[in-house]
View (cartoon, rainbow, N blue to C red):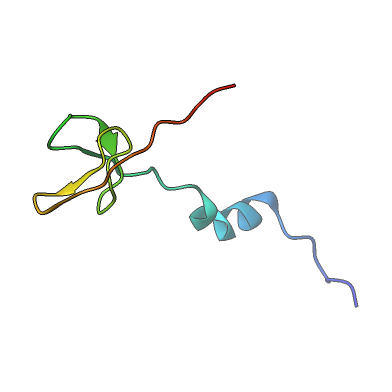
Length: 62
């Protein structure tokens, strides 16, 4: 069955208004100052919190 009337562009876009991408919240690492995701380990130094630091291995490039 086909729709009786055409859905306007305005109505379609209003319905999809909440589909836009949200900006990512970054926080600064307290140890090195690099941008990182909150509640995650720093990719630069491996710092998580005062009680825990992860040891990061260096990647080898061929």
